Amino acid sequence: MRYISTRGTAPVLTFEQAMLTGLARDGGLYVPETIPTLSRSEIAEMAGMTYEQIAFRVMKPFIGDTFTDAEFTGILARTYAGFGHVARAPLVQLGPNHFLLELFHGPTLAFKDFAMQLIGQMFQFALNRSGERVTIVGATSGDTGSAAIEAFRGLDAVDVFILYPHGRVSEVQRRQMTTPSEANVHALAVDGDFDDCQARVKDMFNDFEFRDGVRLAGVNSINWARVLAQVVYYFSSAVSLGSPLRPVSFTVPTGNFGDIFAGYIARKMGLPIEKLVVATNRNDILHRCLTTGAYKTEGVTPTISPSMDIQVSSNFERALFDAYGRDGSAVAQLMSELKTGGFTVSQGALEMLQDTFASGRSSEEDTKATIARIFAQTGEILCPHTATGVKVAEDIGTSAVPMITLATAHPAKFPDAVEAACGQRPPLPSRMADLYERAERVTRVGNDLSELETLIKERIAS
Ligand SMILES: *Cc1c(COP(=O)(O)O)cnc(C)c1O
Image (cartoon, rainbow, N blue to C red; front, side, top):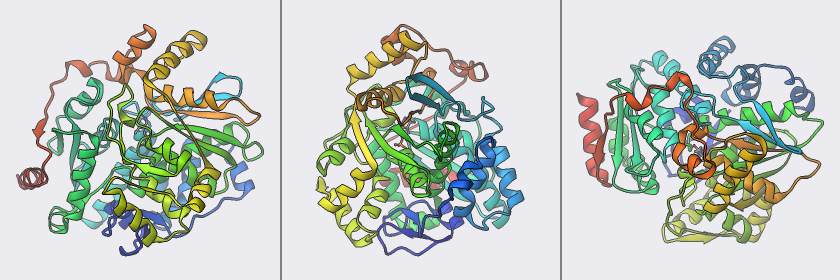
């Protein structure tokens, strides 16, 4: 399998190169040259398999011979061994034909662990084999950073630098990033918002001298290997509910469009998904775009679902690439218009997108009311991100097709917002109960490229 850039001019790479590189040199994102499909009988065979076995079947065609079958099986076993639930991604029922896919049983209590733990294991394997060392730099609105640090802490071939917006992540998220004591972990609190953090990371990747000098590697949701890891739970959950005989729909609390894009890949691979529903909070650029075609940036408003507080959804570029018939120059044109405030999706491309995606938004009041109501009706405590999904799924309404809403984080990651909404303070799972007592270590930095690059060079030299 070969990987090409959404802007059409970067070198074509192997899976391993695309994984270690992250952002393409033309500013685009890597996508597989073709999407492999699974037959109905291959999908049907997944019923009764373990999560790891399904992961193997789903991902193998994309990774080719990067790892032998035995190596890949070992990688998957190590990846999910630290999860707190044997099913890895269990389903619970919320209401008639409405199910919650719990993706928060990993070490940092958010769905990001599914991909990040896998990337940690794959990086370690590939770097040990080649004898190389890399510097991982990532931006986070909270959950990616903690998942990345958890996945890479203590690995000797990697330094990991995580930029997060100072004062805009929850205390649990911050502590998960600042309390690991390993010397290869560097938490950086940036004076800015998430889009600033993401923009500075992109700037570092576009500074080729710096990029090559420190051997920069990216693990943000633009990394293809992360998207790929997330394709697996669309299969495992749909098969549990009777796919391929029975089609399903998904509602996905969305920020950077990575998680829902994985659902799009599952659908292209042959999983019978009727609709993929994008749920946004009040930062609703994707909802506006999918309804009107206008992708216009408006600035970020902080909400109680901070991991969705973004205005530029990086992975949306991958969906646009397909909607524009895989025309890299058309995508490059849109992205240059974005620098000056936005673009309008062509009618044909919008129809392509609307064929797959529906969308809705949840206001702060809606989100709080949903947490309170679901707790009263079912006893389930939702995190605020998950609640946006549940609200939007309910607005779409029940049908004969089961709706699976992705529960993207554990409520204990956002205890203040949850308690304010439903009066319950969700406790941390016992394996991380001492998080509030551990010492923190963090560096405060300006929203400034050269300051950041200097700091990173100094740290990896020492
Ligand atoms: C990252 C995150 C999201 C958004 O996922 P994207 O892949 O960026 O769309 C939603 N909820 C939680 C809890 C997250 O951590």
